[in-house]
Length: 300
Image (tube, rainbow, N blue to C red; front, side, top):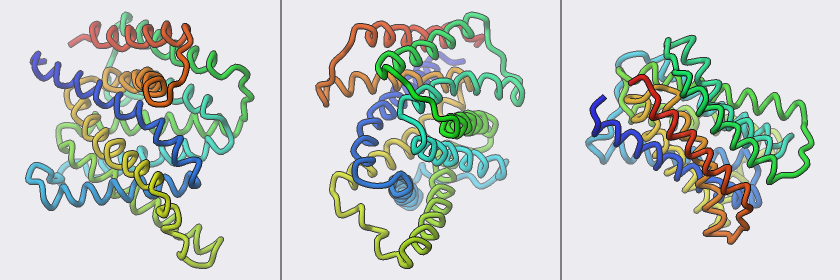
């Protein structure tokens, strides 16, 4: 791989992790104001508005409708499914369990990518993947103290991680036939349509009308937080993930998701003045070493 492209791909990974890391702060704001379904709907409303704007006004943002259309649609379905299942799973479980299940996504990606794409990893990469995943889990457990496991919630969260891993592998699978904007546009459209259909049905069944559809938007903090979760955290991150999947193996691209945990810690310290226990510093260092190691010991 060209050195310049490799540097850009890694820079995209760091930017991706930064956006996702700060998303945890936005999620904290929204869950205090609205229900998970409302947060998801308006995240995708903002994302859909953004991709439509880009498609109309930006020349470089044109979806490619040729190639593996079914795989492109399923990539969007799996990604939306990941978000929806995670939101539902967190109703029954804690955010701690959610963070742990999300941390194992690289391992699931490794398994699926080997079966479907034939991508293999070196033994050194396997070691560093294990280091990164273990550090995230240890950090989360130590921060949480006692964890009461809800079996139903745990199963749903595992399914959400499988869905996220599947979408990443599909991004890799269709990388040569669909550009980054196609991935982003497809995902935003699938999410906008499916989530709004579900939400409208929910409102009609429970309230008998759509009068409360825009009720959460009366809170400016909700609007700003969901705008961030929808535009940077869906549109931009999918664009970045699409770029990484074009130039890096699935496991190398996905491992940057664990780096988001480190970013979220420092975001909490800087913005919310949260304490920084010593074990978090150690775990953060191990996560970073793990991410770097997975990249350094790749076959290409």
